[in-house]
Length: 430
Ligand SMILES: *Cc1c(COP(=O)(O)O)cnc(C)c1O
Image (tube, rainbow, N blue to C red):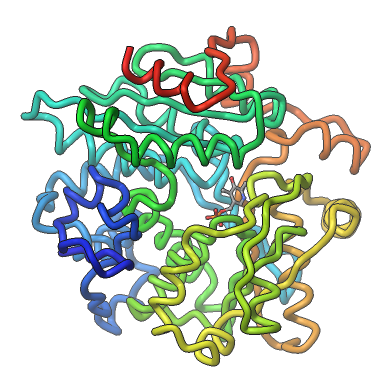
């Protein structure tokens, strides 16, 4: 598969080059040149297939021929070695739990897939690649874990000091080996700006191959299609109109769902559920896209003022506002509404949701008000104990820590403090 840049100025590249470069030289995001729908029988018989078989069919066209089929199977078996359970709350609402991986947020799947693709591309290669990534918490954790020990790949993670949870900080900063953590005195936006500057800095890029590991990278983004297929497999015999409510920040996850839909997955509608960072909610109301600096909320992984994948969504719908609007709704919720939703989910259904999942639940309920016959799946994107303080405070119940969290909680943090771009540059060139 060839990928083109959405800025339309750079040359088309292979999957391999799209993964290694991350972003096109004209700063555009890469997008697949073609999307060939899967045969109808695939969706009809999906309940007879394993998760790995489903994933294989979904992603094959996007990675071939650079990743041979046998290698792809192995990569997928390793990537998807945990469960993706559906929990049904009532006849209209289910949740798909995407937090059973090693760092307990949905980003594990994309990070593990991308790490293995880069590892494969590097196996006969002596050039090192440096993965440079800014994180508000979960991406850094998933990338650190997914890339640990991958040959000839160095990972440098920038995170905002005191703005990630304790558990996230341990996940990012305590693994050692090829993973380095930079603790930035500033906000997530500052981290992101430093990373962007480094990508454009020729003193750096002439000396090392930099790539990104956030959902800009096609190998991080596309595997997220699988979730929607797994949910469909579990629910298709019970419910007719399945819609998804996706707690959204950079809009990579919901955009991957739209790719699954392009492959033919019968998804009736998407709800992009936002916290107070509601650039897209406003866009669907006004047709004006007005990015804003992010504000801090209790669902911090969605504190994004200018979602990077929105441009891919525009491409999928050929920049037609009405087509997008027919296929996607968006709602935005405050911290107080999110806390009230966490409490409601706990008292009504005895289910503990994290703040991001709770925003997804609210989006599902808002959609169901006008579409009471649908079945809405909200994605539970992180385990509640990753946000222990908020969760225990709201539902007033102590939470047991899962083994993945226990495994890092006693670790020692090792991070280099930086405060400005020059510090990052010095660090990378050292
Ligand atoms: C990253 C993240 C999101 C937002 O996902 P996008 O693909 O950036 O829209 C939502 N919830 C959690 C827990 C996350 O870590």
